[in-house]
Image (cartoon, rainbow, N blue to C red; front, side, top):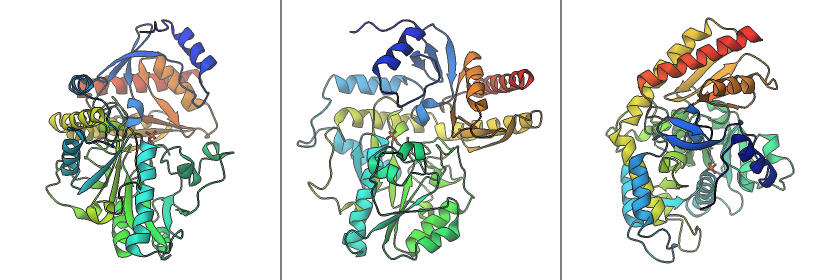
Length: 426
Ligand SMILES: *Cc1c(COP(=O)(O)O)cnc(C)c1O
C-alpha cells in the first residue's frame, strides 16, 4: 500500500497541488473515525458534527456495516447487471419491504438517483399521464439542492454552481419553497408531471417548512395527477427523528404500521446514510404503476445494485432499526434545540436555532458575506468539534445519530463556550 502523508500540512499541500479545487475544506486532516469521533493525523480527537452531510448517521466505521462490507468483498463485488447476483434480489426485497414500495431502482450517488427519478417522472408523464412528448414540466423549489449534474444544476438557484456550465436542461418550473398557493397555481399547467421537493432543505441552511407544507404537496400532487418526488438523501434514514422526514412526527418503524399514505411520496430518493457512509449507495423507490415505465435498455449503471452495495445497505438499514436511531435522534434533537434556545438568550451572536431531530442549524447574527460563521467553525475545531458553515452565516449541526445524551451535553458545552469566547474577543 501507498505510504500516507503523516502531517496535516503536507496532506493539505498535496491536495492543493494535485487535486481540482472544487471544495474549500476546513483545514483539518482526518485519518480515523469511530462512532461520533474522528481523529486527525496528529492524533487530536474531534466530535464530528457534519457526519459527511448525514451519510454517517450510523457512526463512523460501524463494526456491523464494516463486517458486511468485508465479508461480501471477499466473495463477490461486481457483476454488472448483465448477469444476476445472489445479493441484489435479496437487497431489493429487503429495501422495498423496509420502506413499503413495490420496486427499487438501485444507483450509486445521490445526484444519480435524482437524475433517475427525473427520468422516471418524465417517462411516466408521457406514457401514463398522456402529456405530449418533450412538453413535461417538473416543479422544483427556490434554494433547492439536489446534486451537481448538468440537468440538476439547470434548476439550481446557486449562481456559483451554475455559472459557465450552460446550456441547461429545460422543463423545470421553480417556485417559492413552503408556499402552497404558489404550488397550486403552478400545478394548473397540465404539462406538469411531477414535483421534486426536499422535506427539509438541508444545504439551504436547514429550512424547515410549515407543518402542513409536505402534506399539501402530497395532496395537491394527487389532485393534479403529478408525481410527488421526495428527495430524502439528506433528511431520510432517521436523521430527523422519524425514518423519513415525510413521516412528519410519526415514529412508527420503517415498515409503517399506520399506513399513513397521506404523506407517502410517489417516488422516494435515498442516498448518503443508505450505506452508513461506507460505500456510495443510492436508490429510487416507487410502486409498479410508476416504475413499470422503466424497461430493459432505458436506464442503467455499471455499479448500480452491485453485491457489495446491497450487502452494505441491508446492514446499514438494519443497524438503524436495531439501535433505535430514530428515537435517539428525536430525543437528542429536542435536547439540543432546548439548550441552544436557552443559550441564545445570553448572546447576540446567534439569532436562532432551527431543525428537526439531529438535523439542526444556528443562524449567525451577521451579514451573509461575513466570515463570522467560518471563524466560529475554526474555533470549534480548535476546541474539538467539527462543523461547516452553509450558505454564508449558517452553521449546520448534524452529528452521527449514535451519540449519547452525555456526549451531546458535552458538545453543547463546547459550542456555548466557543461562541461566548468568540463574542468576548470580537
Ligand atoms: C447530498 C445531496 C444530494 C446529492 O448527493 P451526492 O451523493 O452528493 O450526489 C442530493 N440531494 C440532497 C438533498 C442532498 O443532500
